[in-house]
Image (cartoon, rainbow over all chains, first blue to last red):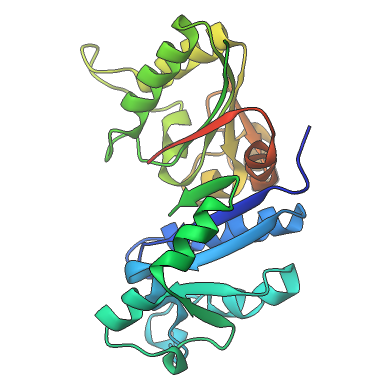
Length: 122
Length: 132
């Protein structure tokens, strides 16, 4: 018995490159969306570094998954959330990030979590 | 009142306490008269299904402990195929398709797609607990 109205929040806290935790979190978000669940994908802490918009894969001899992040809207994940405090702490601004990101306050993050049936952290 | 639990384990069997904690939790669930509907292994947690691990006898035998929990709970030990393949945790089918001489996964673990985790997450009427 699955619930079509279920809302899953996936929070990516881990940075890119040092592990594939963030990539595996995004994979789960894509699969949940493919199964017609409402998905809130949130990047918090060092996780926001996944979203920097001018990374070059040639420099690291590996695939970047920013292409996967740019494709999120095709999987019905219209919006990717980043927390304002994480941006501020890293002296970053929204214009340094991929275009489909929305910066939110901690109170808005709390609301997303409260509204979710499940939350998974990566 | 009896509660249903679904577990997600993502922590490594050697680099984290995730499996020790999850196994203790699972045993408490069962001894408390509750039910366990499934255990899903993702990320580095899939390494617990490696049938080639050998540990000193006086250390926790995580793979055997999971199998005992699953037998008692009559639930599946589910493992993400993509996460397993990345880490060399390969079943018979994948091994033969890729010209490998043998499988590395213990047969009591069930290889499933990540969609199974999405389904576990969406299921009503059960508590979902993550060990990382």
